[in-house]
Image (cartoon, rainbow, N blue to C red):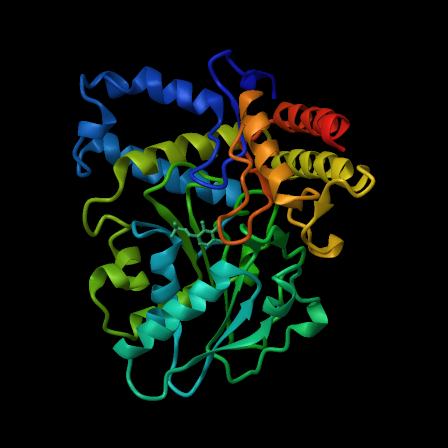
Length: 377
Ligand SMILES: *Cc1c(COP(=O)(O)O)cnc(C)c1O
């Protein structure tokens, strides 16, 4: 997108999160920072009960509703605590006694989601439990299950899965089926708004904003009427209750006003650029270019994920040695390509290609990879 042309002082940002933001949004934030809409105050200094912030808050929700095509009756919620707080809130709100919470373990984040739900059990009565029903841990999370491998019991409270595995670099390219009465819950932190999705099939989707939607500090949650109804039947501290947060339109207490403001600008920016279809097309183009470079390197670069599970958001790969990987990261950084070091738990290289990463960034990375291989291959 032409408006994203990189000023000289900026680098290409492949960080996994907090991650790249659209340049026009950063420029707008800068321009409005000292006096928001002529008030003489920064949005950072404005009451969350003011009419100015009310418009921001409602505007952010409305923009997300349009961008993500949130079905009628579903609520969009803003909360703090990151995706990590949701790991516990899912169990606290949606688990029913005698009906297990089922988890697909496809990476470190889904494992954490299960562990935090297990900790939350201590706050619930007898008969609540959670369990893993599928895992690719033995093969280092190199793939997600095929649709026929996801077998959810009709007794389950919900199925929880991670649509994009940020660390392993795998992604679901389908929506898992659940039996009638079982809620479908998804951690979409690292691929929300990256492609069209039929939200009507989900009961709860949550995402920390700092990968595809904005800055850190706000978690976007989309809840179905069924999920809200189940939450309503349970007495929970207000901030831990989806129903209570929804009832106050996410203004139960001071929301993360600045993060919500930036999310609004980001969502409006993506809508103006053509919405999810345009984003999906560009994301696919970026991923194709980078995987093509990996596959065409004669084995110098090796992808970590199995081809059918490859993520379009986080591309993970290895070089012939850890020494070369360290050199790769270091030299790339000198060329203005930052954030390429793999997660500390797995090593290797990871290029995160979220919505705000322009095609030119990937073109520059691929050119650097060819040159690096020529020198070190
Ligand atoms: C980054 C990430 C998280 C953790 O998010 P926080 O907002 O830091 O709690 C959880 N799940 C996935 C898939 C992620 O990518």
